[in-house]
Length: 179
Image (cartoon, rainbow, N blue to C red; front, side, top):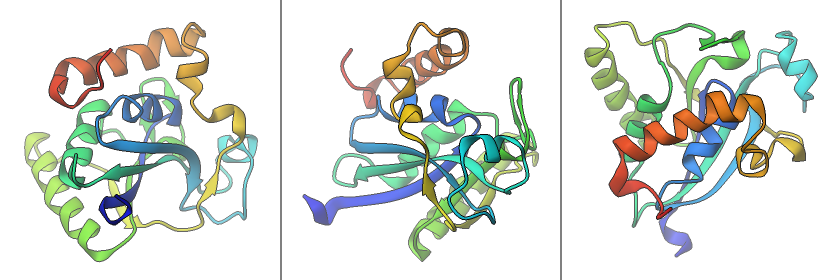
């Protein structure tokens, strides 16, 4: 099975939202919240939120390519966040909430470029998603991991994360895990 595993790193706003969706996707075997593509070494959540580290809140999505393709992972990504708002998702504002795809190899970059071009056509040229090699990644603190699963009734989760998970389930019913 390990020959079929691949990993992509995605920034689509608050990592709690993105993580919660990908934990519901058939073929995704692991999701880890973290910080990527900034200049500080192993920043804390508070440092990232200050906007001074340059990091993005991201999720590393490990998936089984025998069950789901990178293209499908990225198609989900473009449905569950707004790729047309620079440094913002809903009320979350700052460079740490930017839209980004951080690839791990040349093939991922190629596929991501194709999917971004399609999304850009759909959004009439307004996509601001950055496409870069993953750099300076560090895992977020333990309390951020599986946040929605552990705190579904917390206010932000109930009113922001929950609706994103439902949107995914409705849009990609065939890709969602059985409830």
